[in-house]
Length: 178
Length: 82
Image 1 (cartoon, each protein chain N blue to C red):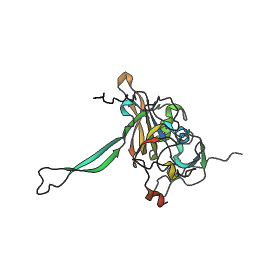
Image 2 (cartoon, rainbow over the protein chains, first blue to last red):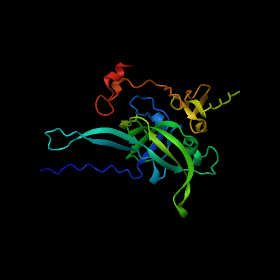
Image 3 (cartoon, rainbow over the protein chains, first blue to last red):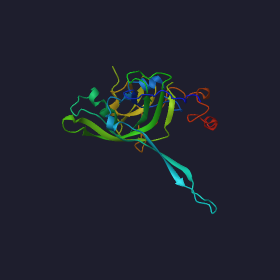
Image 4 (cartoon, rainbow over the protein chains, first blue to last red):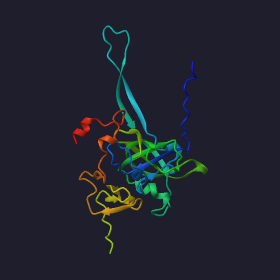
């Protein structure tokens, strides 16, 4: 028998980007390179803390079918699927000057009700500019209000902002940037 | 003389045009400096306090450019409904 296929691992350690994009024109949700790279978009890869970075989740409900009189077993249906955002903690300098990099995320998101899309790109070096043909996952999202807080304990503590984000519509996966 | 920046609406938003993409959208006023935005003198929120939907500079992709199978496929019905 031939050796079974063993695809190469897609290494994502330090090779992932999470980019907030304010609006995407395509009905398929595939962003254009211009949208992903616009100054109004924000790559939060180096702002979000690793233990509280945006981490979209999916949970699909499995429900038991009614057992028919003659059934010897109980079977399932696939029910609703819930897409969830969660909490996110990002760098924030409480003393940062207006418009500075260390308050950029705060000034974009803190007020809450900020809608847009989270574009997640994996297995590309993080400093690589988003370009046509790269595959991304796109999550329509809304950021809740943020509050200043601390991240880390003791000597490692630093200024941070914490808030929630929700997935507000059907996410789309493995879309090629246009 | 440059036009003065419009005031944020009662929900703290501004309607802007993103000069990088041409799209018009509503953003929190605090985000104005963090993008290549031109503030527009237009409503940014609806009466319920939600941001008005963006107006995109480009038309959605033509049908020939969209996947015809798989998870991202658009259905013919979606297109037929305009």
